[in-house]
Amino acid sequence: MASAALVTSVSLGDYPLPLTDVLSVLGGGEGATRRSAYVILQLRLPRALGAIAVGAAFGLSGAIVQRVVRNPLASPDIVGINAGAATVAVFLIVVFAAGPRTVAAGALAGALVTAAAIYLLSRRRGVTGYRLVLVGIGVTAMLSSVTAYLLNTANVYTAQQASIWLTGSLAGRSWADVAPVLIAVAALLPVALRLAAPLRALELGDDLARALGTRVEPARAGLLVTAVALAAVATAAAGPIAFVALAAPRIARRLVRERGLALVPSAAVGAALLALADLAARRALAPVELPVGVLTTVLGAPLLIGLLATANRIGRAG
Image 1 (tube, rainbow, N blue to C red):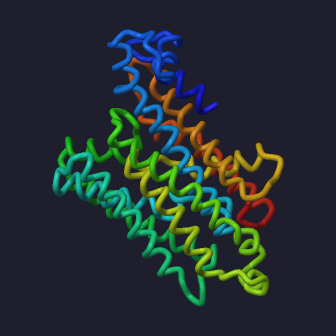
Image 2: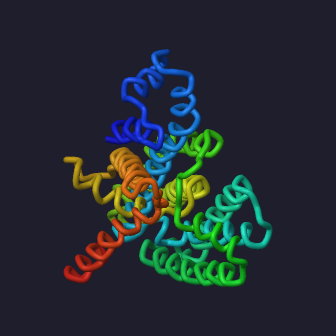
């Protein structure tokens, strides 16, 4: 599905291209004109691949966080990682009028520092998923208030720039923006699969996991660092796009027959979700283009409400 969305996204636009030209260029052929090749390779393909890479990073990160925390309502955008990236990014835009590269680097640093702070604040004779989520929600609320203050004190033009970044968008992304996410997903997916071996033991509880010989804290810390790195790189590249990390693991576990870790399916579903959402954001109201974060929020909010209603009905968080 992600491949179909990529080809369709590259084909559609204000300058429509035949699918034969798109497939020829992507396949390394010379059947298209030089103009078509430039539009495909330099203007549309980076954005389409960026949607797939960012979606995969969010999906994989969300799957890891939900499994480690043992809570289907947990995801990087809910436990505070995205909020840390957003606050630093808005600070750089409002105070220093920073450019896209500086904002992306600052967002990456903000996500990593916030994640470390949440982990340390949650730690008391180990880290429990329940405490991690609660601390993350509190940190998110605090950072969101700082972000709101920065936006209210900025001039209108600067506040508009910051608001666009906060919504989450893939518009205008180049190879330089996409490459770090592609590299991060390619490098960290094998790491996540390698570190995922203790996950089943961790889901049984810390005491039983230790009895089975699992080094609980190093295992949990390694998985969380991997999840944070994926979410941080994705947020730095496209902004804090909401709900992909929450929805992708849920959908993946319903699609695969083996209801286990589902890390690779979660990455695939995240890639397909964001690729389709970005395509819809581009073409649904053409020539007006929506930020993709608006669409994921509109579609993801009912999912969160449904999960909360289910948790309330059965008396637990999932």
